[in-house]
Structure formats: structure tokens, C-alpha cells
Length: 436
Image (cartoon, rainbow, N blue to C red):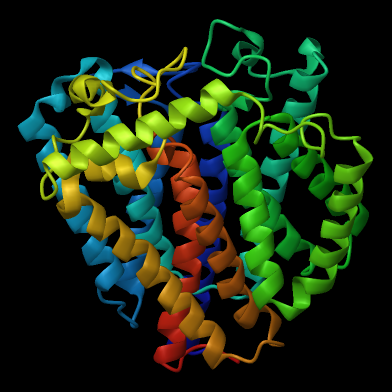
């Protein structure tokens, strides 16, 4: 074995190791967070096992990049991520929101941009083949299986099997009475499960063994999304499936059969929260009115300060007068926070903070479409990975107009790692390094 072959073998093994570490990091985020505070050391910031592992992943990546002969330069997406992070941080400092107790707004900047941005940076510099993708998505399936199991236990009140135990404490988190998972927030559980449902659907096509288990896992994930009783979650999974069904020949048959089954259940009345006679989309009218009021208030704030906004993290502090004169309902939505990502960014950071985020999403979509067009639709891994990413991004973007995803580092990092994989493949295709 010559030196070049040895170096390539070393790099491949190191990349595989880093991908496993990333999978473990996602698992750790389920159990180690600011809610349960398990094994948390407070030293100005909360030092936890997941954060220690994340730092180790960064160091391993730096070490690996020093060994690589092929250098991937910073691209437009990473520049936009840096711009977005800088704008949000400066806005947070100038507005004074950075001094909020427990670093609430500063932490959302890291959960929304910094941590997912680093994940994207790392993923884009790894070379993904079928073995690496299957390894990562195998762990994503395991995570989805666990989260859906917990959701079932929550729904049927099987307390003994729920861990962490705080999940069954009604005083912790919000949305008590729905499936909330370890995030104790139904919207985060449902959107994460929606994303994992799509990656698991892809994983199903990649394996020959354990297909029955994966089918069971897909059923439990989808049912758990239903058990969250949250409209944004339903919108995300349906949007992702619709996009995947339109663009992917490989998934179309499965999705058509799946949609037929869903329509059968819908018209049968078996789904008591989603049927012709009863649906969350025509129930909870006060909640719908609240969302309309919040969106209108955010829009009026944007009109007042369209370029720089009122400052990142100031929506609650500055929006009171913008609710005056709005539709008089029992709950006007004032005090509930922001439930629309784009309008929230427009109100707080204006066009300066919103345009970079929109450009990030649409630039990734453009690269995904470009990769798919250049590769034969029947080259499964290379051809379907960008379509999976497009469906996830579309679902995430549409659903984020109904809730605020900035608080969940896990959700945003899952979105960015699937994007990073696609951009990595696109990069290597351009450089003629991908084996097709």
C-alpha cells in the first residue's frame, strides 16, 4: 500500500468516525438539555456532555482537514451564515436583549444559526458515499424510533416507560396533553419527527434487512406526529411528502399509496382530530385568531422599521401598541411570542436580518436542484439525496411560518446537516471527484 492509498484510507476512516460522533451528538441532545439539566456544570455557560462532544467533533474535523489534500473553500452559503450570525448578534447587543436573564436571546442565535452553521460547515467538508449516509440515517431512524415510542407512552399515559421523567410533569414546558417528548414542546417534537420520517423513508430504500422494523418505525413516527395535535407539524410532513412525491420517481409509488391510506382514514372518521367533521384547522378558533393577530402585529412593526427592525429579541417588549385595534378575541396573542419565523425576523431585524436567511434557504435549494438535474434520477444515492433535502427544506420553511424554530438547535442542525450532505456531493461533483 503506497503513501497516497494509506492517506486516503486514513481520511475515509476518520470521516466515518466523525459522522458517527455527529450521530451520537444528536442522541445526546435528547437527554442533555436546558430542561432536565442532567450532568450540567454551570461555569457561566451550561457545560453538558452534548456540548463537550460537539467541541470534540470540531477539533477532530480541524485535525482531519489538515490531512486532506483536497481543500473546500468557503462558499456563498457559509458567507451568508456568517452574515446572518453577525447581524443577529449585533442587533441583539444594540437592542440590549443580550442582557436577558439566562441568555435567552443569545442562546437562540446559537441554536438558530451558529451551531447549525458549524454542522453545515463540517458536513460540507466530509465526503459522503452510500456507507456513510446509511450509517448516519440509521442513527436518525433509531432517534425517530425512540421519540415516537416516548410519544406513544405520553399519549397513552404509560408513565413507567417514559424517560427522561420530566416529560410527564405538566409544570415543565408547554402543550401539556399533547405528545411533547423530551423537548416538552409539541411543535419541536413533531417537526423533528417529520424530518426523521423523511430520512427514514430514504433509509428504507437503502437496506435489504430489517425492512419490517423500518415500516413499523415509519408508522409510529407518523402516528406520533399526529399525536402532537399541532398544525405546523402536520403541514411540515405533508409538504415534505408532497414535494418528494412530485420530484422523486423512486418514492412516488410509496407516497401515493400512503396518501390513499391517509385519505381513507380521513374520510372514515377514525382520526378524531383530522376528519371531515372535525379538524384542528377549523377548531381552536381562538388560537387561529391569535396567530393572525401576532402576524399582523409583526407586519406592522416591520412597516415602522423596515431596514433594521426593533432589535433582535425585542418582539415581546415592543409589540404591545401594535395589537391595539386588532380583532377582539379572548386571547389576542400578545405575550405569546413570535409564531412566524419570517415575520418575526422582519419585525426584529428588518430586511438586513431576513434577506440573508431567505438567501441561505434558496441557495441550498438551488444547489440541490442543480445536483439532481446533473445526475440521472435513477442513480439512487446521488440522485435522491438532493430530493430528500429539497423536501425537508420545503417542509421546514413552510412550517416555520406557523411556529418559531429558533429555540431548537437539534431541529435546525438536522436541517443543516442534510443540506451539508447535499452541498458536499454538489461540490465534489463539480470537482469531478464523485464516483458516478
